[in-house]
Image 1: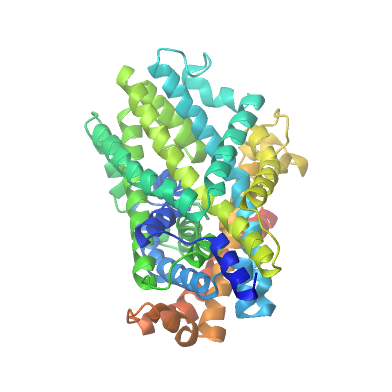
Image 2: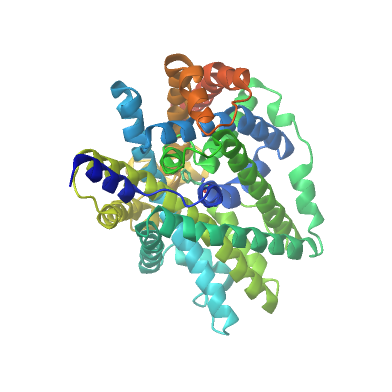
Length: 495
Ligand code: PHE
C-alpha cells in the first residue's frame, strides 16, 4: 500500500457522521442526560427557582454557546479528539487534553452507576406491568433496599456499561449516530407524554409555582450570588457536556461543509429546552403526590418511583416509560464520554500507523470505568454501615458530623466526590484554559473564524465571541473556581 492509500484507509477507519442531523442528534444526545433530568430540576428548586433559571440562561448564552463553538471548531479543525487536538494546536498544551480524559473517567465513575440504577427501576416497572412485584417486596422503600443490594448494584452497573460497549463498538455512523437518531426523537415524545399526563394530576399546579416563583433573595449578597453562579455553572458544563473533550471528539467527525455556528446554537437550545421540560414533568409530579422535592439521586429514584407507584396500575406504565426515557438520555450521554476516550486512543494508533481496534479500545475503557465506579456502587451513598466507606469516613469524620452538616459535599459519598471534582473543578478549569488559549493565544480571528467559514457560511457575531473568549468566560470561570475552592477548603477550615 502506498503511503497515500494507507492514510486514506486509516481515515476511513476513524469514521464520520452520515449527516448533520445525525451529528446533531448525537451531540444533543450527549448533552441531554441525567444532568437535565436529575440535576436541573432539583438545583433549580434549591437555589431560588427563577433566579437560578435566569443565571443559568445567561451562562448558557455567554459561556455555553461560546465554549461549544470553541470545542466544535477545535475538534473539526484538527480532526482529532481532545488530546490530539490540543497537541496539534500547541504541543505545550497537550496536557489540557489529558485533563479532559481524566474528567471523562471521573464522570463515568458515577454516571454508569446512576445509569445502572435507572435500568433497575425500568425493569422494576416492566415487571410490575407484567403483574410481578418489580421491587423485591420493598415497595416504596426500594431505594433504601437497592443501595444495600450490592450484587444488584454491580449487576446493573455492568449491564449499563455493556449497553455502552455495544453502541460505541458500532462506530460513529453505524453505532452512535444510528442509535441517537432513533432514541432522541423517541425521548422527546415520551417526555411530552409524561408532562401532559402529570399536568392533569390534581395538585400539579403547586409544582409549576415552585419552579417559577421569582425569588431573588439568594442573589442579594455577593456570597449568595457566587453560590448560585457556581452551582449554575457546574450544572451548565455538565449538562452541555463541555470542558472535557466529548464535544471536541464529536466535532472531529464532522464534515467540513457543515455550519459550526448554527450547530453551536442548536445544541444548547435543545439541551435547555429538555432541561426545562424535565423540570415541568418532575416537580409538578412531586407536588401532586405530596412528595418532597428531595435532592439528587433521591429525587430521580426514590421520589419519582413513589409518584408512579401512587398512580395506581396506569402508574406502572408511566413509570416504565419515564425510566426508559431517562435510560435513553443517560446512555446517549455516557457513550459520548466513552467516545472521548476511544477517539484519543484511535488517534494515537492512527498517528503511529498501528492497526487500531475500536472494539479493543472500548473494552479496555469499559473495564477501567467499571473499576473506578465500584466505590460509587458500593458505598450506599455514604452510609456508615456500607461495605465501602465514603471518603469522609475514611478521613476519620463521623456520621454525626455528616448529620450536623459539617462534612463538605465533596466527600460525603463517592458519587458526590467524583461529581464535584469533575463538574466543579475539571470542567470549569478545562473551559477556562480553552477560552484563554483561543482568546489570547490562538485568536478568535485566526482559529475560529477561518474554520467556521470553510463551509461557506459567513461568520457572524465576531465581537461577541471574541469578547466572550477573552473576558467573559475566563472571568466567569475564575469566579466559579474561586467559589469552589472556598467551599472545599476555606469554609471547612473556618468551621
Ligand atoms: N451532558 C450530560 C448530562 O447532562 C453529561 C455529560 C457530561 C456527558 C460531559 C458528556 C460529557 O447528563
